[in-house]
Length: 299
Image 1 (tube, rainbow, N blue to C red):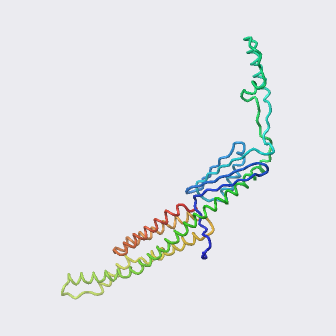
Image 2 (image 1 turned 90 degrees about the vertical axis):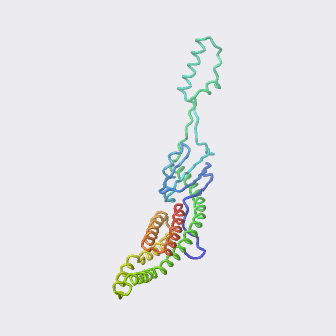
Image 3 (image 1 turned 90 degrees about the horizontal axis):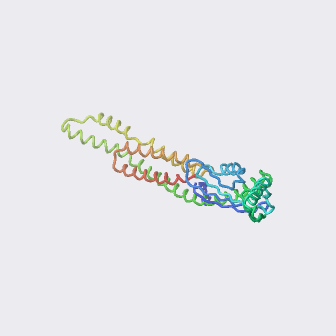
């Protein structure tokens, strides 16, 4: 990544809002998301617009790869009038007939009026006027696009901070790997010196078998060799950096690489029974764990 170029890592945590009046209808869309292993999208919108849910979900899925995403859609009344109200005549007739029967049966005052009838449930039918459902869905999605842009801007800002932290810790891991590589050859030399001293002490005046010492040292060197582990450590760090600088969501791949980094660090620790390298391995694992915590929030 060039100096000054924005990081492409995006956080899974974010919030976005879009608002516009489209074809005489006020539409507001809000998104918020938190960490999740996979994409879990929940959409809440007025029941009469439920037909647009699939279009909204498809647009979100095309834009976001993982995270628990909640989408809230608020739609105001159309300036053109998108509902029609009419009398539910069978119900109104039934109420009127019942009121008349009540009046006649009990000799009550005849005060049946429009205001009285209108208070009864379901006397009026409120129906949504016929609309082009695809056009309405497109209107909602156009405002959703505004919300997604706002949402992405926030995720990118958070992603920049994650990128800086992860790449900084990756450099620390490389520096610690260098320390292991510098110290590892001395372990065999130390072992050979200790072995020679021990054998000289046991055998005392007997001449030491130098070839036996060399053979034992070679066997030990093979057991404690960490060349392959350090090479893989550097390879994993390089891949991790490449994913962080890539242009596609890579949180799951980064999570896998962290597992591999941890595996190599554990192997080095188990092979090299040396205090200096043990301290380096502890530092290595601490840095790896900090990266693991950060990438839990990477898309």
